[in-house]
Length: 171
Image (cartoon, rainbow, N blue to C red; front, side, top):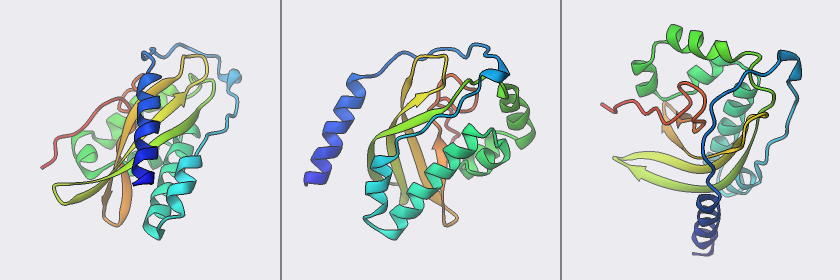
């Protein structure tokens, strides 16, 4: 009960802080800086159960790949329904245009919750993203457990193509 109450308080704080999305602006490639991300809530979640530790690890790997512009990894980390809707070649050609346009990337996990929807385990994160020159973005991010792996259903970054609120139709 205390854990749920803490999540509700964090969720209310995150929703109250929602900021409008900004469009990507061109940044000089040499302006890329490293940033650190706040994964404290994921660390707490990871301590509760080995399956939750896998979730926390998969989330951190996915966003590290995004920060490193490892677009193959981010595509492979998406849900099967996303991959059925978006061909790999289209995804890679679209997101590779971002190389050199993001001055830095970091994120903060503000809240976490578990769901079972249609018999499938899902997790929801409330996150804050910092993409450097733009104002921070606050978003809901969804993850789905499929094929013994946590896969990103909605990345949550509204200003990047295919990372915004794109959700493929479930079959």
